[in-house]
Length: 172
Picture 1 (cartoon, rainbow, N blue to C red):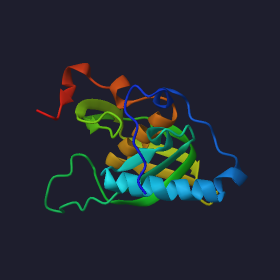
Picture 2 (spheres, rainbow, N blue to C red):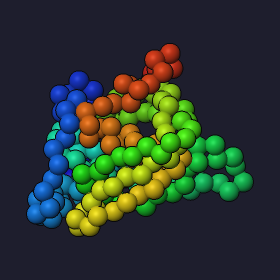
Picture 3 (cartoon, rainbow, N blue to C red):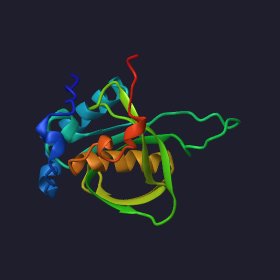
Picture 4 (cartoon, one colour):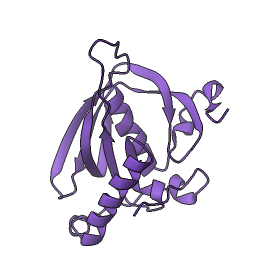
C-alpha cells in the first residue's frame, strides 16, 4: 500500500512535528508506518520522505539515494549513493563553512524546482528505527537531503529558502 503525499497548502506541512517517545517508536504501528513511507518514497520516486509529507505530524524521515555515480563524470553536487535509513527525532547541526546552491524539488511541491543555498556539511543526531542513537556526518548532496527532510519536520519547505528568481515549473 502506498501513502498519499500531501501538497503545499496542507497545514501539517507548516507545523513542527512531534517527537516520538522511545516506547512509541518501537511500536508495530510506527514500524509499519516506516515501511509504508519507504515504499511511498521509492514509488514517487524520491530520495527522502518526512512523515508530515504523508499528513502525519511525527519527527520521522526516511532517506535513500540509490544513484550510481559515474566515476568519470564531474561530481559537482558531491552526490554518492546513500543506503536506506530512518531518522527519528533528528537534531541538525550545520558545519561552518561554505554554502552550496543547487536546484531542488519536493514531492510536496510537485512540478516545481528552484535553486536553494544550503550548508555543504552537516551533523545529525537522531535515533534509528530501533531507537539506537546515531550520529551522521554528511557532506554534499547527502547533507542537502538531510537538511531538506529535517526542514519538513520543522514546518518548512524549500520554497521558504529558495532564490525566488529561479522558481520554475517543470510541466512546460
